[in-house]
Image (cartoon, rainbow, N blue to C red; front, side, top):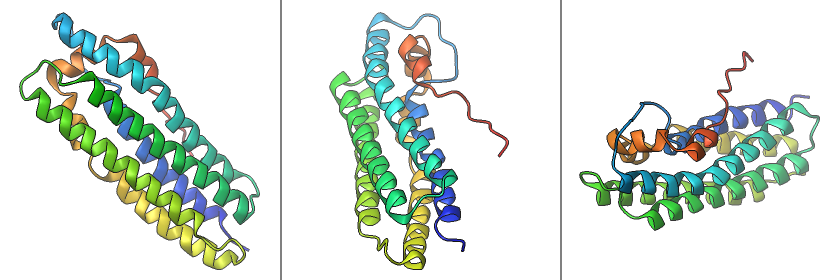
Length: 198
């Protein structure tokens, strides 16, 4: 009986794509030497706030992947996925709040870039909250129906993980990215490259 395992595996793959969104904010890439102190202070504030949220997102991702490797019942899969989506929704909301609180970075069109990124992060948070509702509504008593429902969620998740982190990329272009690469908190917010040859 094939059941939910291959479907939840698909969910985990789609989810690992979603974790990439946070990396956009952890400012990897580029090396900056002298950008001004105001921008450094902004980058530090954002990086320190993003770090625990990046860990939360990673933990949610790991939890879903773990459910795929165990012999989990639909109830266990539902419970784990529901909690993971809730955690991810909370984490993206918190990152949005952190970028909002930090104010506009001291760069050209900084206020627009900041607002676009906040809107995008809040949108991602809402999408994960919707996925949580969908998982909670699945019928765990009927394995085939449950697997079908998970397939639909995996498709939505796939779209979510490949869609718009454009505003985040725009926010961390140029001097902002350079300032962020200098922050210790941003370096540690970046999960180790998961190049597992699975």
